[in-house]
Picture: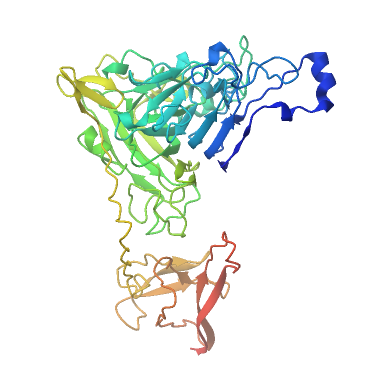
Length: 581
């Protein structure tokens, strides 16, 4: 959902209808006037350029933003509101359904409001309650008037969101405000972790359900924790990781450390990643010493591998964590002294892992099909990343299986080893999840990563056109030792043939055709210019005897999302002959 330019009262006398007066007087009914209640999962919400007036319950308990005695609404008379009324609400009843990165606001006006934030449940602390998050692009909702990352203020989240002394807390939600500009690469990230299929299958039935009472199950107990790396956080458990193992937190720091109660996972799957490329997400887990690991990125299981669109990328090992941090996300570091594995988790396309090579994909990248390579939801300059649900990263440990459901390494990692000692330089003290400072000179600070955006163009400068290669077809003569990037139609066989050649040293032999439209083709998106003529030349040799009709066609795919485009996808014949022998 994207909204812009909303303006109106949450409550005033005009909203009262005499039709309800009898009910109001008999039952002392107060209207529950939550102006905007965010859903709990699977949606995206961006609100910009909007005003909220007279929203939220008025009481001395909720006067952090406004002390006007006429602010908001009050529980008196026929025009009253319920004491739980708020300007913004969060659905926090569920352990089963939890928010991804799905909330953002910009240019918001809060006019004469009472209570601003409210969790729907605070009598229980749920997974959805601990993972609440919000991108307040300009701080007009938090009141800081600077870019703000809003996170959960529940005590059971530990220091997961309370990352430094500058974090401001609001007990109304409860939420916390993290100043995004206090670090060079701060942002939000979301991942889903899976290591025990039998455990995760209990979600929604015997564990981690969609709402429960405060004194009865099914409960959603932790099976481990994830915290920020560094001595500042070494004494804190961090965020509980349950059978519903979704994690949302702050990226751009020294990294996240996963610790499971039963030990190192035999196979760990990381999916549903949402993170911007300029906010590196480092993820670490400790293994028993001398354990070898294999780390692989997988596209969706329906990915069809070709020479220019692979379906897997196996990570290579590097010698330092900093190499991982500054990598394109396809390397890992395994510390031989501690067994600590570190990878960088990035977003990559759902249906392929390279084009053809792996890269640090950006939200401006265009995929082979002409659409954006990475999913997103955006409006008015605000972008929320959207997870690719079927691609994932697997970490497989070469260890003897043990523990519940054989989901863990039988040997335990050595948890007496110091995993946080190398975060800060000598004589520096960790002040935040992404900052170490000299205690003698507090302004002398270092950060794990600084993202330098590409230079912007002078607005008065006209960009030079990008020259296109006049040769549209790649490997048009089949002379490169393979058939890449040519692809065959459905169920058509094709192979390199060096025996029947008209020019050069090779040709493509096509077999198994059962329809006239079947053959070879390749993607030429982005290679053609409008109103430019192109010449096509080729040779076709019919293996069977006789005379045959032969056509060469080009498939046109149109962007029908605009009102001005009414054309349908179609094939166009660019060559035809009825006398090929």
